[in-house]
Length: 250
Image (cartoon, rainbow, N blue to C red; front, side, top):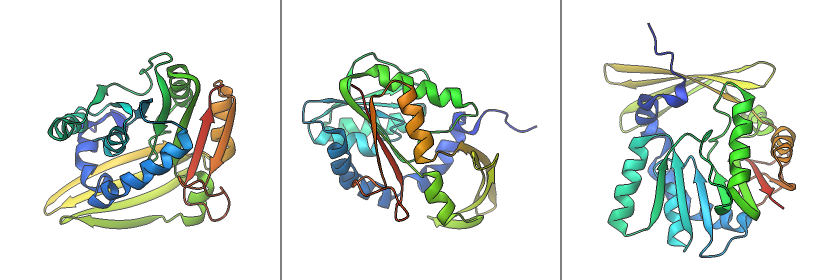
């Protein structure tokens, strides 16, 4: 009998996928991404920033190195254990919190918040996504901004591939994808092959267009929204590589 736990709540999923999710290339991109994010957030050194779904701390470290007070929240203890050890080794002060993004809320504690790397839309119910946005809205001070960065529905439609594969340190990842529910969701089967060992995960997440994500954040109380095609602030048009939404709290 298979594990009925949702994929995003399986520790084995996050542990097994870490070498593919957080490669050396991903870490190397973090400094530039944070430079771009700081422009979108409009915050200065000394500000308090929430990194929601911070993983092992790629962006949290870069924010802290630039003089910001950072709180990183994630549901995966192994990622936070790694991040804490790295922070201690570097002498970087970062608060790491083990909590689900559907429940974490710290009223009016932050000047800005980020949710990067398609870390949104995991849950079966759209009400859970709404709860996440409401939590962030309540956690921001007046004038704060929330940056969400993901693969937008329009971008995905232009590059969609049913299957492909990658290799990392001798481990092969096979990815199979299927669009479901009239482009509301993406259903994925990820198979890890390491020698004679084989693991399979079913990963499902909700897809958002720019209009849908904008509507959600405005409905949750944000006063205005800017939409971009990447973190540098490029237009969200046919050349867009990602969907970036910057929500402003009045």
